[in-house]
Amino acid sequence: MGNSPKRPSAPGGGMPGPSPIPGVKALVAVASGKGGVGKTTVAVNLAIALERMGARVGLLDADVYGPNVPTMMGSNEQPRAISEGEILPVEAYGVKMISMGLLNPGDRPLIWRGPMLHSVMQQFLRSVVWGELDYLIVDLPPGTGDVQLSLIQTVPVTGAVLVTTPSVVALADVRKAIEMFRQVNVEVLGVVENMSYYDAPGGQRVCIFGEGEGKRMAESFSVAFLGEIEIDPQIRIGGDTGKPVAALGDSAPGAKSFYAMARATAARVEAILSAAQGPMVQID
Image (cartoon, rainbow, N blue to C red; front, side):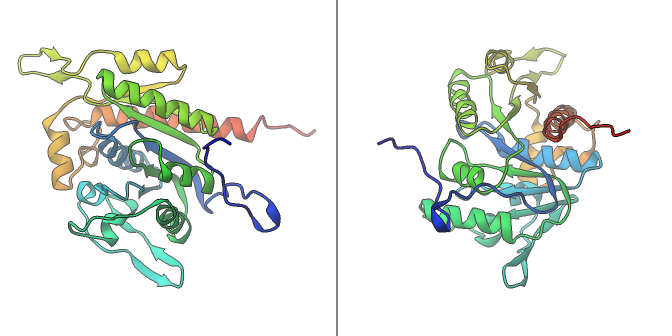
């Protein structure tokens, strides 16, 4: 007997498949093999950049143990229940948002096991009134655990963005994440290398954690390389103060690389959606 997770049986013994969220065109999971690589920073700035580029965007904070999205988005507003089983998301920077950090504010820890995590994922995906969205960005917890499996079993995931740093340890873990998504038949949109370099005063570029490893790894797995995100104090300050750099526009310090990454991600999503629709058949 293997130890692979099983989906719950449907009435009559069938296996329920993932069902789409009405109105959501593309669901993009932002994941990492390990913590500390800036995954949430990438997810937040990706969502805002896509919104600034004209898309309708939602952001689901699925990192229930470390829900940092509200801090980075500068909002502590609590979502409103508008009816039995319907929740209005909070809006910040034009992005619709839901997070356990909005429902469980403060320093109280969540001590939950698998079934409870599955339940909250169902609530966030099915009970939140997302409306019409071009992208629903899902900030996953690090690793390859219960929340990832719950998401994959519940809704069709258009693709996953894998965040890493150039360090050998982070790269080893992101390899495992790529293999996990492949095993469950989720397309890997590509790899983002965060904390790639630092432009020191005087114009010298310093690669603190290594150089080019993320791109080489993406090539070795035959997945797209979505871009490098620099080390910039404004990125850290923006996250800490609830003013993400992407909200300042494409030309703001620290924001250009996020917009380049967002454009690359949008192009990959469009290619996947177009391929899924198949070629247009002309009828004479």
